[in-house]
Amino acid sequence: MKKNLKFLLILITLINLIHHATFATYPCEYTCTDNPLEEIYPNQNMCMLLESIPPALQNLSYVMYPCSDIYNTNRFGFNKRFNFFPAAIIVPTTENELIYAFNILKQNHLPFSVRSGGHCFGPGSLSNGYIIDLRNFDTIIPDIQSSTTFIGAGAHLGDVISTLGDLNYAIPTGTCPAVCTGGLALGGGIGYLARPFGLTSDSITSIRLLNAHGIIIDVTPDNYPDLFWALCGAGANAFGIVLGFTFNMYYIPTVSLVSLQWDWNPKLAKKIFNTWQQWITTLPENITTECIFSYRTGTSRVTINALKVGPVPLNEWHCAFEQFNPTITNNYRGNYTGAATKIASTPTPPFSKVKSKFLFEPLPKKGLQIVTDLFSKLQEKGENIRINYFFGSALNGAISQHNPNSSYFPRDAFAWFFQFAYWFHEDQSHETIALLRQLYRDLEPYTSPYSYSNLVDYELGNQYLHDYYGKNVKRLIKTKRKYDPTNIFRWKQGIPLTYPHN
Image 1 (cartoon, rainbow, N blue to C red):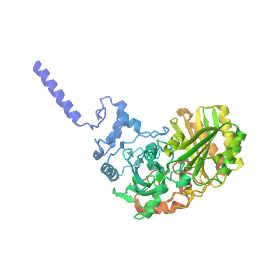
Image 2 (spheres, rainbow, N blue to C red):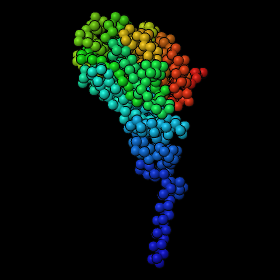
Image 3 (cartoon, one colour):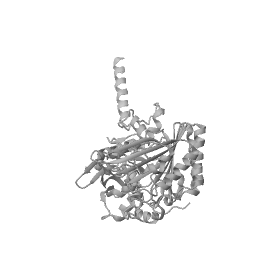
Image 4 (cartoon, helix red, strand yellow):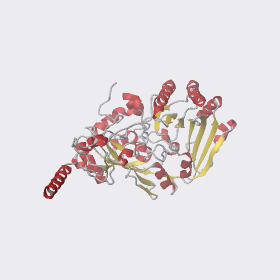
């Protein structure tokens, strides 16, 4: 009896060893099995994803597989409206790891997205195929002697601003610390240094790129003039994977920042905004300013921020706005890092939607009435959402100067106009998005046909090419055909090989 029992135990052990040897194992909490008698229901979808991964991409230390908490967190971007399940998230730590993974994806004809920081308002940096995440390409190397700096595509703006600011230098960027350099620079890059120094992309001198052949090249206006032009304004996952940039950086030991604020009064808001529109036509090039209509959970306000580069204090606002008795919330003089910190974006609710337009002339009375009516209604209803309307000064200055090395289109704009909505709960999505859409439609007669490509808006449909890139579309498509003829780098609002028709 004991011999039979011992034999049976040995037999069971051998069967289990043979059976488990056929499992696909990953650096995960469990293994996948094809045994229908085993209870795998909680993990069946993840197992299917795992089994779809080519063997050459399995068991890599720099890949997040769909069976762990880290995968489930990282499959989202910052905007939690979009729920994707990639087969894997590839997070290379070296250029060789990136080249290897890219070549496997290319050989197997597998779709992928490229993510610098995941701050895309649409799902452009997400994929149900694979995500190539560039977070480890976050080097910041300033060179004071040449007044240049190399910055990796995955470097956060908060780190860029503080690292360069410690040396009293800066490049023109936005001030949201969570945004990464890659996505921002490839779409232009608008911020508070735009009028003295131009767009983020205007300061680029060289771009490190993994091309469609799986080769890393350094793109400059001299060796690849057409590709450099396309990348500087329309380069987001369209022509290759950008790993980093060399920028001209600017010595800025002193700036002045003034923030003026008013509680909501629709009549006063109209006067302030009309004054602001007149004021920006008189400003010197070293001042960039925004007029912001904001609503946050029961309170509407008007805010004007203005930043001036140089040692002379920013006093220009007095003659225009002192008559309206503003509350001065910022009156700062110091280095750029300090100013950027004061106007940096604060953490936002998990769900969001954005739309944008450029103004090529001042917003007329009827358009302004639509805006003030919205913020009055929001104040009355007291909903638990956040709405921000940003109007920024683009007239004159470096941002409006023609740049033959940039495909950024709306350089002749009078101002930019960005509409942001944020909300806390998924069941608020329909109503909040409908609100933003309606106001966008109502304002269309008073704006231009053009939008900002960095504020990804899938609702533009096939019109997005014209709205983002205007007369540059044909040249961009020609460049696409030359450098990516099989359309390896593609996403819903990328540069296509042919012009789409509705």
